[in-house]
Length: 153
Image: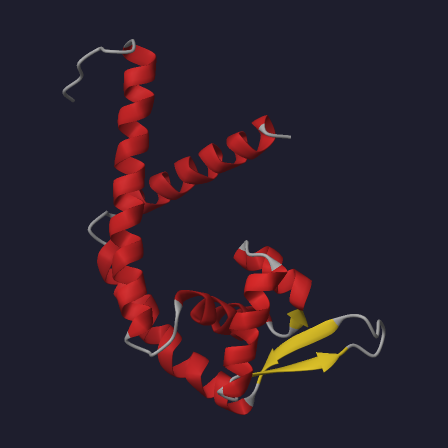
């Protein structure tokens, strides 16, 4: 590793690691978005289809939490998916203020069609790492994410 020791060994290593993480994410995300666009979906639309396809129907708020987006952004995404008959919104019988989002029959077909192809694309990108390396990286990223969450509480 080439370092200039500009900020001190510990900080230089942290900055170098962050840059590599950011570049790797950017590259994988770009390829992921290209894959998603090939299905004529935006990334937020795909995320809704994927979440509902794997987890089943859920309240709008729960969907926002899963996708880390605000309610305002979600409304537009859901409006467009509903226009395309991919999701439907239903008022909860238990809580009339709550709206449940679920895939329509067309949404379920789309999920079955596109998710497998998307998963294959991601697998192709990630399998440049061995199985052991993927497990190690996954564990390290989880450790990093959880530690950052703990520090910000």
